Image (tube, rainbow, N blue to C red; front, side, top):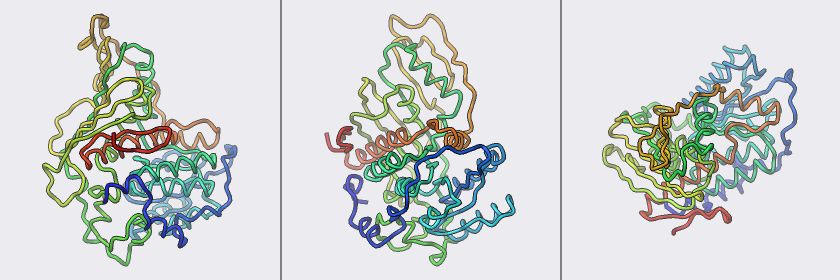
Length: 413
């Protein structure tokens, strides 16, 4: 993937829209969020019925009765996924769901009130924007986008339509992290200068079998989303995590969870600038993305955020460590400890008691009914998208990049 495609919309995508591709839903009537009574059933469509889609179907099934919700439609570009999901819904509910390969068909269904977007990363924001224009509320998996132009389009569409959005950074509904955010924001750590985040793994979770994927079973044009014109490729379909056409790599795939925590704790969403170093040091398997990366950003409130990710060694490290002048807060301990503090460091450890957990999907459905903000609204999805896109591009270009919040653009420093 050419580096400049992180910054501009491609001609192939324009052509896809112009010829009436699955994103062309602008003519549909908008229906901004209305109040839903508890007795009204929420009809949900699943867009992307692979691993994450199956997981989220399970989450909906757990709360279907309490939240009066039901999956009524499924969409997947791969026929076996689609058929498996439809069979599951029929078995659970006794009703045949609508099933299709192209998400525009699902968005056109009147019985669909909300969608769950669990596709590969490159489709997240385009489908989110289309869903908003169709008046559908949306739960969108992370990272929200792998191209800045798509993230901006989604934000603008959601704001214009007034629909409810929940981003799939589920730690936002975790009681430990909710308590941690309030604790850090209380000033208990003094002046915070740096936050370290990390995620390590040594197992090839991406090494999925792909020989069973037949060309005739895949809507390949829809899968590409107008973002490229590559010929059908089984491996690119099943092992999309490895390629730049479909994801921003480790900063987005895994890092978005942890950078989201850091900016949440600091109440400072968007970086000023950032850089990254990394390479393919362990897994020589034809991947385009790093298997090891170090990312660094600086933020307006005056602190550094570091994200470390290696796929060759999973020695355990805390997910998030916050360094302040009064001590250090470690999410492996859920304590503020004096260690590392300066002259004003705390005299003894302070344990942070967790708040009650929420079901992340339940919070989304509750917000549709009560009109309150979700725990992970689109603004936080946009923020982690900016950070991950910036870091991925900085590693590729081997330079420092800045984010211009006023112009909503990333450029070289």
